[in-house]
Image (cartoon, rainbow, N blue to C red):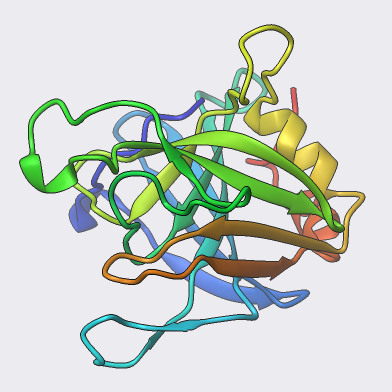
Length: 205
């Protein structure tokens, strides 16, 4: 699983293109021979921000990473979700609400938001999985894969992406920060497999 960190602009070559309704961002770091490809899928639903400043559209990202010289690369895969901010504590009294698993380590502002269990739906089939805030962010979560129970509940990032290859619609429920209702972010994943296969950096190995 890749480590998500801030990347200096001087070390990166950036390019963006679009395919199959998926926004593709590519970057590289010549210093450590690392290349990234982000496959970004905007939600087809959005919510009004609590401060009334406008609507926010969540973003689901599959991040592919290849490190090393050609034919000697090591691949890693990660999944991110930009929520715009999740409400702290227990997200909802309803079954589809997310549940806080751990308390914050440093920032009191993140209390009840560092690690959450969010309901996922694959073509309407629901299961709950663990997500954690990435460093220095209050809104972007990295998929961790643990479920509601300890035994036999792990669904890795690779397994999640492979599962999405055979679905047309994927959704994540969460309670936006400053709001009382649960929001369902919906992502069209029909073209994900084709786009994934077009990039050398993307591998399920």
